[in-house]
Image (cartoon, rainbow, N blue to C red):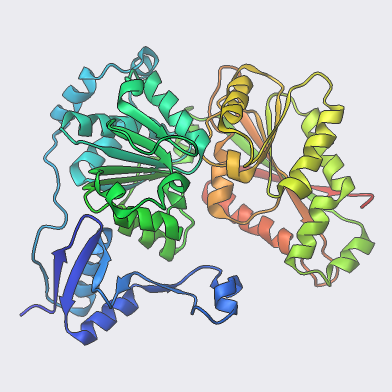
Length: 493
């Protein structure tokens, strides 16, 4: 007699059969508070209890990728588990087969010269053998090449149609360009889909943003037999989980990301949608092996005047942000810093109207003959790609960009400086933003991050965004980044 029996419902969900009491126990095991739930409107308005439930007691279903956790649940309680139908079918794929397959690919000669790195090869092997994987591989580690090897193998094995989901239109174009550079006939095999482009295609691979497809009817998703999710840390949003659970026939489910946000909830959702975490390498190892630029951080702590610090005791978080982005002295400091730096610089901000436009205007007025670019969500994808391409050939360009457009995935090898103009404590955003500066270029071996923070301390009062700096420093310690503090007086508000 078994306490719990699992059945494969489809490639997205597993069905569980058990006594009501065991089902409730399983549901409780997979119930978590969502990080920051207490600040969300639905919780504040008492429309939601702040929890996410991964096991559905109404349908008795749970994400396919959580089977290993169900096994652990049973082991901890001495429950007898039966798996009625195969739920995790692996692929027989030897190292010899992998080598022969890679050799027959006509990769770009530069990649052949450099060689496929050992960790890329091992990640490819793991993905093919296990069919499900959440690839944790830092910026600059060559995730696009790993994805390319996987999709080419699936095409070779006779898979009919695949979906590659990326977070931005810029990344649609960049992926297409990367695959072309590897020798792929992208024009005949790949369809790029985003706003204004036809969603119907007979081509093997569709590269798209989640925004372009999440409202499509169920039958749209049923046509795909594999899915690759790039920058998969963004797949926790409801629209993205809807896409992934709609891909009922996608037996290969490979997610790629440079980082996850460190919470159990986020990790379990991603593993449920894709599969087990596989860490290919780390940023520290890539820097040590000279595969990424040497990297250091300058934490510039701006101490504001005493009269402003006294006022800040009455501010809530939003009031503090409003002051920071509107501070003339602070914005001029950022401008002067950007203009004084040698090499190409990326300035990242949060608020387009209140902050980004002001910074861009201030910098452009004083930049002389230097190229200054302004990129945000409303910038056409062609223009973003043009900015990226121009910067690769420049030595002193300045890009003022929103976190949403240039913190994730954009590949600029010739970037020497990154400036955090807006405060953030998000682990994912910070590490992804840092990644913009880590790639090695022809004229670059080192990158510097200028992390700008604001000190409004007075008495026992510690301001919100200074606490955010403390959270970022914890991340720097975990990642073994070199950093140093610089205290700077802000004379005028």
